[in-house]
Amino acid sequence: MRKYLFDPETLLYELHEESGTARTIQRIAIVVLALGMVALYLWLYVSVFHFKLPKTAILEASRARWEAKMDLMSRELDACESVLTGIEERDDNVYRSIYGLDLLGVQRSGSPEARSFENDIVISKARIEDMMRRAVIQNESLDTVMVLAGEAGEMISCVPSIPPIMPVGRVRMSSGFGGRKDPVYGGYEFHPGQDFACDKGTPIYATGDGVVVKAEPRFHGYGNMVIINHGYGYRTLYAHMTTIEVAAGMKVRRGERIGTVGRTGKATGPHLHYEVEYKGKRMNPMNYMDMSMPVEEYRSMIVQKQNDSESGKRISTTELLKRNRRNEN
Image (cartoon, rainbow, N blue to C red; front, side, top):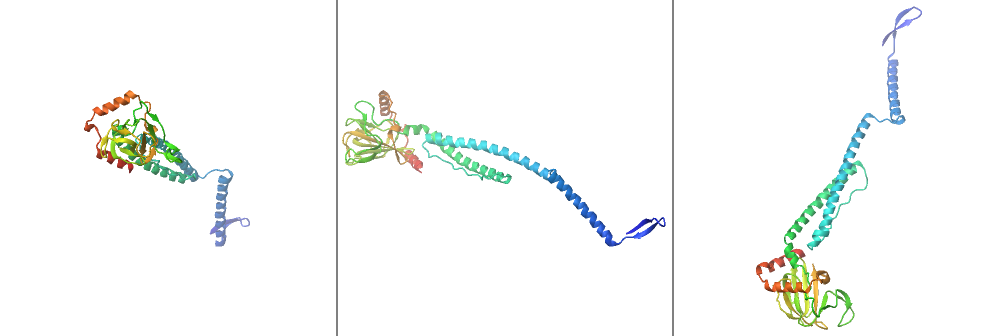
């Protein structure tokens, strides 16, 4: 590089030639100094004054906006899940209970516990998929309940709900549901029904609409007995009868006479042994009897059933058996 420098002796500007190595060193020094100044500036900016780089500040502001949106969506999902859970609980504890359906007990998916922006997205996605699955199950359940609700009138008449013996005269409740001492052989036994001690020949009435599936004389155990299938998972058994006034396959209605009390089979005295079965499980019959029912109301019901014999008002045998198979499945 050519330079003109002032010579104080000659008082003239004279040409001065600078070597290439010196020029290169000079340039390198300038670059290193500049980089050092930039590094010093960044260090002071970030570490000493705790300022954020513009790009970092923009990214963090964007992240904060998205986190706020995720928090809002999470609260909305909480509200939706609370509503869905309420519907599920109401369906299990009210609707399905009324119509004798098994509880759904829908399983809820767990969510990751660690909190991070990326994990929040995964959690929200999993919660949405879980609620969609539960909503589909709940929709199918309510469809089933809606069908049964249309048949509610028939169901009410089918479910056992009255005593099988008119509560008048010398009728008393003897052995109840649960453990007791065997009256014949001694020792402990489970008594699966309710006994009604009364005079021999006392009329026995069906406790709900249904179809007689068994009516047979026996000389041991339950003795002469009748079993009625009421549909919707319900069956009732009447044992130790003297006379049987129905036959297998017959349709009966609540309050219709099906036989009389006796002491056949394993019985120490005249009484009716009555059982209620729901979906294969024996239930306490006292939970299916309105013992406060006035005698006159009971008698009026019996007279009405005797006078009202229109077959069109009865459920067909095929329909009852078909409904029972559906409930059992």
